[in-house]
Length: 279
Image (tube, rainbow, N blue to C red; front, side, top):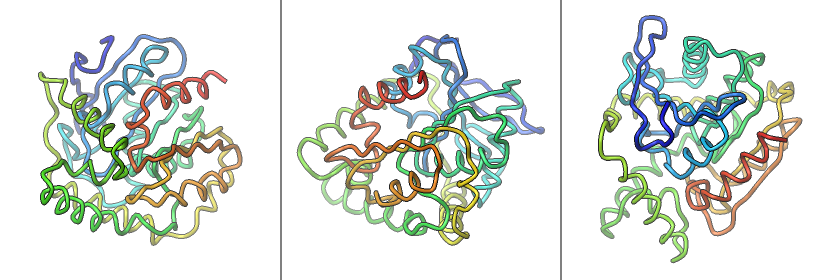
């Protein structure tokens, strides 16, 4: 197992006849942490500082779910099917207990996962995400398109607009984050296809249109909910709503930060997550 993300090989595991691509980082003891990533993302969209920081104490496992990046199959168009794939992936690795870190769409997958297979989950970290029935996810594709247009017009990367506030401090953090994403030069993941992006956009819309998250009231696992104070992708109020409905939740809102708050403050996020996982 690699000591850092940028050197971790991409492996595959058979999940019901479909190869799922994943990476393992760290040799820490205790329950592994499964990272579930955001709309349009592949393995290379995880911040190496976050991955390596968590891997200093834990085994960290990054995965491309069905149809994403280098994984086979076709991406489902609903969160519940994505969660079932995540459950099957964990079981294919032979794991009996995991902590879940889900960002954005990945946070929705984590919420469905814990309701489908609660015995597999010890703790939850939910960043930049919303409970089912909250407004915002259905507009994610529109926000993405608008942000791409704004970024192109100003010669910037779309994540400058999507993930970060427009202040000078937040934009400087965006530059640093994007530079970190480029550090891995070998064994890069396959690009996410337009078909996958379309399926994920449909899943986000269905999540918003689904019934209120009554099932979350029965989640007994401790949860850490994180967001920035200026999230344009999944409105920050959704994090408050999520923390309110989960019985055992802590809420952290980072200042002068957007959807990618965990990448703007990676050291703080890692410190907070490791403290939560040790507690």
